[in-house]
Image (cartoon, rainbow, N blue to C red; front, side, top):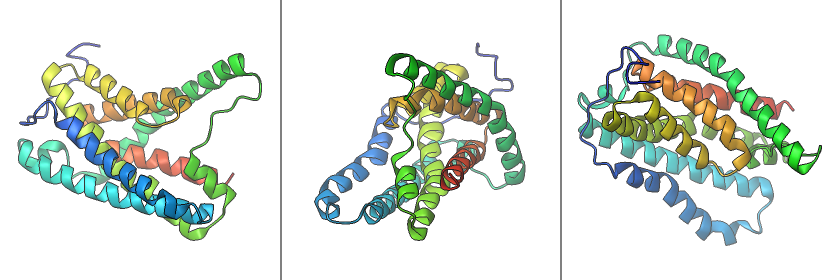
Length: 245
């Protein structure tokens, strides 16, 4: 749990200002919230499936814009540009294999957190307590729609992993790691923020455990593709399992 716990550990060199993550988080979270606020009256008369469809399309567009801005910023802020960030085409197959292995390794911890939240919830709220499902997935199950399911899968398996890993691992974790020189601290701080930006508190412990594994894979390999693949695989399994009941 010290500076030498992730060997070989090489901090990613960059010239980012310490306040950059705040600006990136605003770009990531601000526009979707504003669009949702202004379009809410228009969606009130729409069926639930159509309203959810437009919400996901909005999030996809926002994610694409955020990801593009982060990539442009990283190209000029990191030593060696995007390669210094961990975006390189060489070794993609290897990264995918190790992402799957790392996800399998952290999966039991995620399940333990889910079990712990369920047990504590039932202790305080009764035997009927259950962790709330993701609202979007719940809407898909309640309103079967092929187009909606396709859009949600694109958002969950492609756009969210790319944009969120660029923001949280690529920018935030890299910044904390470079200033503290303690990779586990950077992983922990990033994971705490990553979990808390997801609205439901019952989701925070399992998301924190997942994020710790994702952050570890980034620091261990130096490749941002591994966190992206881990995130995509986890979301893919979650979406498919919900669709299959």
